[in-house]
Structures are given as C-alpha cells and as structure tokens.
Length: 588
Figure (cartoon, rainbow, N blue to C red):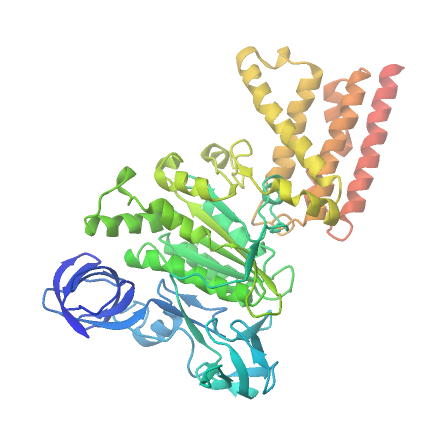
C-alpha cells in the first residue's frame, strides 16, 4: 500500500492515501526509500517520523508502508557490533557507502553470510514454551548465546539438528497444539516499543559492582535498578558512563551514544578492544553492543535509539544474564521528542517539552528490573538502566532532570565545582542518594564484611559534619574550632582525597573491588579513632599529621591487589605504635 507526501517539515513528513496503515508502522519514503515510522493517523493521513535526512523530499513523493512496527533483529552477532539508532550496522554501511552514511542504505542488522555453530540442548519430542532454550551458540569467547523459542510459540519439538548455520536457516521446528509446524532459526525479531515478557519481577538484592569507590560504597546501584547521572558540561558524565561500561559487574553492556559528540564514541571504540574484563580476562568488546546516534546524525533517530538499545538488552536478560544499558544522554533524546512534538503542533508543556515527557521516560526505565525469565526453567536475569542527563547550565530544576529523579532510585549528582577542583568522579556526596542502601545491607554483611556498611555510615556522617564545620570556619576562622573538630575536618579531607577521588586513567586506581574498598575505608577511620584518643591525652594535632603511617595512608591505593588487606593491617599496626609513642611522650 502506498500514499503520497503532502507536507515536509524537517524530519516530519505528512502523507495521504494510507487508510489501512497503523500507528508505529515502518514506512519507506521517496525514491531513496528513507526509513520512517508513523506517529499518528488522521483518517487516511499519516504523520511520519523519518529517521534520515529529508532534504530533497517534496509533495507528491511516494510513501510505502511495510505493515510492520519498528523492530530489531535479535540473534548471534550483536556483540562486538556498532549500530546506528535504527540498528543498521555502521561497519556494513561503510563497506557499501564509504565513510559518509548515504541516505536510504539498507543493510541487515545481522550478517546473513556468517555461519554459527549451533549445539542443540533439546531432542525431538520435548515440550517447549516461549522462552525455552533449545540450544547454544558461542557468540564470543566471553559469552554463550542461548537460542530461545520466540515468546509467542509453544508446542513439541518435531525437528532439531546441530551444525553450522546462518541466522536465517532453520535449526528446529515446533509443532503447535493446532498441528502447525513453526520453523525456528537463530534469529528472531521484536518490536522495539514493546517490552519483552517475563514471569515475575523481583526486588533487587545484589549491588552492581563497578569498582568506583564513591558509587559502590556510598551510593550503590542494585542489579536490576535504575540510576541517573546528571551534571553540567565538563563535569565528567561521559567518563562515569565509560567507567561503568568498562568495569560493571555484568555479562553484557549496551552503550547508547544518544546525541552526544562523535569523538566520545570513538574513544569507546578505541579503548574497549584493548581493555580486559576483570571477570573473564577477555576484551571488553566481546560483551558489548554499541549504538551510535551522535549529534551529527539525524535528530529523529535519537528517539528510536533508546528503544533499540533496551530491546537488545532485554533479549540478553531473557537468556538469564545480567545486563547494563547506559544511555548518554537522555536529555538529547528528550530534545528530539520536543522537536518532533513541535512539528506535530502538539500542546507544549514546561520549557516546550511535550506533556508526555515523564511517561516516556518512565516507559524506558520501567523496562529495567530483576526478573524470572519465561521458558519454564526458572532462570533469572537482570537489566540495569543508567541514564546520563545533561541539564542546560547544570540546572537540575529543568523538566528532564526532575522527571528522571521522580523515576530512578539512584541519583549521582555531578558538581561543576568538584570538577573544576579536579576532584573526579565529581559526584557530590551531599546531593546524591541511593534508595537501595537498606535492601543491600544484608548482601554487604554476608559477602564483604559486617563492618562495611558501618564504616560507610560513619564516613558519610563525617562528610556531613565537615560541611557544617566549613560554614563555621568561613565565619569565624579555623582557630575557633576544638581539636576534635579540626580532626573531623582532617579525616573528612582524607576520605575525600584518598577514598572518594579516583583516577580513571591510572591502572591501579581505575578499578577497586569491594574488599579493597572496605580495607581502605577502615584504614582511614582507624586513624581517626586512634587520633581522637591521642588528642584526649594531650597530643598535638600537627604531630599526628606528621607520623610516617599517615603518609602511607595517602599512598595505600597503589598497594598490590594480592596482599592489599594484609598491607593495610600492617599500616594500621604501624600507626597504632607511632601514635602510642606520641601519647607516651606527651604523658612523660
């Protein structure tokens, strides 16, 4: 079925003569067969969002509907790949069109020529339901890809064979209750705007280990949780996202560069193949899918890129894996929504954003979670969603930041003052929060140390006390403080500089496991404890700051991983001896 264009307004095209078309159908526009999606229907007129540059299009050009919603191809070959916002492989496009993406280029998302070795895990006669695993493919050396029955199919296996196949070849057949034979290949398609089904959702109980001390210790994110990273220009949002993509304790990472600078995606492409996953020892690209819809690509495709990414993430979650999706940034996505809403002449909401901004954000974040997958075998998977927010001028009172804060459970607020002071990650410990803290305490007690959360609470209280004392210092000076208060300021400074500050570009400091974080924090707090006793016995503050063990605390981040706890214990013992010697000398 085809219609004719009657209006072109940037990425919005209005066509008539499409009475049987449906909302969300994919269409092909003009002679170049540009990809678009129907946003709404009025009679036989369709308002179409075109995901490519529309210059040269005019009234009278033909529009053909495919009758299918915008869908992604799911199967072996997703990992190590880089796609644009509508799942076109950029390497495949470059092979055809060169370094500049030509309009109307159509390249399948999954390689149709490559053969994969399929190993069946079912036999003829076995009963299967939607989501049942029928076999496996080694997609990369870091991940075993599970081939599943599509969610809407169930019945009895009537045919299955192992061997080498392309993604389109039949590897099994299922005879349904009606007696129909349904062929199953290594690939399935799924509409991006529809969440993939699951049996039930659970409350997240395990933290997402990231190796970033301020995140793991102070504001932890649970596997299956949601988080936002808002901050002004230059405060380090992208580096935080990159650190999470590199070191997060997950099986698969889906990284979406949505409307940000192209050089940031280039950094990812250059760095990830060289970096080793601390869990598997393999290249990080072997567990990563990249979706690039940078600022120089069509604005309309930003909106689709978020849904493309989370659908791919849900697919790996359904295999029983832990998946993280990182969107950088949702503000650029919201701006694309605003542009399309304006061209559709919809009633604007606050700051021109559409009135449905909050519900669209919620639809994205609610697809995260820790779930029991369909398939009948009880496997569990998790999908963690982390979105960067780029408020203009760092003003988090703007609509995107506020809508996001109402939805997510973790808020890592980046501070430009910390960034200018070269304190990275520039996460402000007074403005940030995590609503998962209470639920994760038992995990920390059982798997790290019963002292871990106690130390965290004590350190957090000390940082808050420091903020209050700094106000007093500004008014009446340092001399007005007691020795105990001056020690609080000094200990808080050690927490900030020796614990919270972390260098993403130094080998020994870019990744810190939970047990090492616990040892380092205990070391700092032990100094505070011993120093308070010594001050009560008359020891001068400056003498305490001059002991050799204090200097070792500042260098403790570089201690060997294998003997970290023992080395910290040795520093504690040395510190106790040196402070006791000072206290003994004072008494004499």
